[in-house]
Amino acid sequence: MRSHLKECPRAKQQQQLLNGQRLSASMDRLDQQQSDHRLQALEQDVGTIRSVLNEEIRQRLHLITDVGNIRKQNQVVEDWNRDTDEVVGGLRRQIEEEASQRAYALEQNQLDVQYCCNITQSLKEQVESRLDEAQKLVNQLSLDVTFHQNQLNDNILKLEELIFENERQNRDKFFQIEEFMQQINEDIKTKLGNSDYVTTKQATLDYEVKNVKNIVCETEERCDKLDRALHQTMQNLSDLENQMAMQQRIASVQNIRGHLIWRIKDYSKKLDEAKQYDTILHSAMFSNKAFGYALRLDIYLNGKGTWKGRNMIACLNVLSGEYDPLLAWPCRLQAEIVIRDQSSNMAEAQDYVKTIFVRKKSDDFIQSNQYFHIPHKVITSRNYLRNDAMFIEVRILKL
Image (cartoon, rainbow, N blue to C red):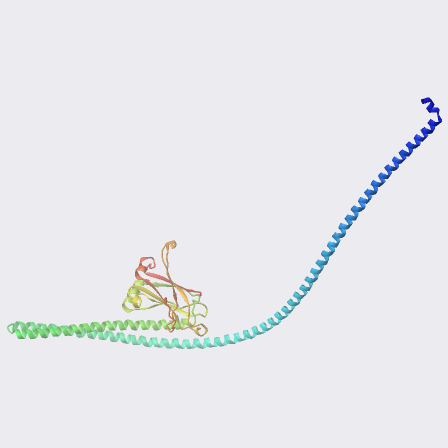
């Protein structure tokens, strides 16, 4: 069959037909493969084109978004430029107004400076005239002090003469009394039997002794009054000297910081004088500020009024000053009065502090705490006294 098939024409035709079928089948398969391959390539190209289109769409969307943002930014910039132009215009107008105001203020300042110069010149002239008046007043006070000193010396001489005359009269009276007593003794010895005469003499003697006692008492009272008058005259003289020194210091108060520390020495002696003669201690003058109130601390060592004899009283007074017309009245100042503790250990020191109001004698404004008082036993209980000296500090408070 194989040999026949090799030689049979039908078999060859069939073989050729079969080969043709196979070839067409392979061609079909090849065409199918190529079609599939082309289809895949086309699909890939389509996918690529789609991805490219999608990318381009995204980029266009980004571009559209960026364009919108740029438009918004341009709008914001335009608005900002418009606002900036308005602000710049406003600033220019303000600068122009401020320049005009400054020019006006400069002109006003020049006028004020000229006015201040005129006022200063007038104040200088007034101060010079006041200084001349003060100098004249000081000279007049010097003359008054000299006159009062002469009167005091004359009063002292008259007092001494009066005391000597009283002593001489008293001596003469005592001599007369002794002579009279001797006569009475002699009369008693010679006339012892006459009792009526002795009674009369005894009554006369008692009357004379009573008169002598009255004379002695009157002499002592006169001496005491003269002593008080002498001390009062000395106090007046000291006040005149202080007033003269005060008038010299009023125009040029050195302490203008509202702070004073005053050392009172010989405390025991001055306390005894205050108990006996009601003396008043005056501090140096000071001021609460430059061209401010003229202030002075007055101290009653033995107290005053209901506090007398048990307390020390201090009062801060406002005096007449050169700059009173320029200050506010009535005066409303507060001050701290401090009794300094002189303990050697500063950590244990305890100052005695109290706040008071400043007082002016002609002021109707009365405060309940215008006086500073401290008991004498408190002063001696701690180290407020040392070497018979005391330190008192005054601090003007800022309201």
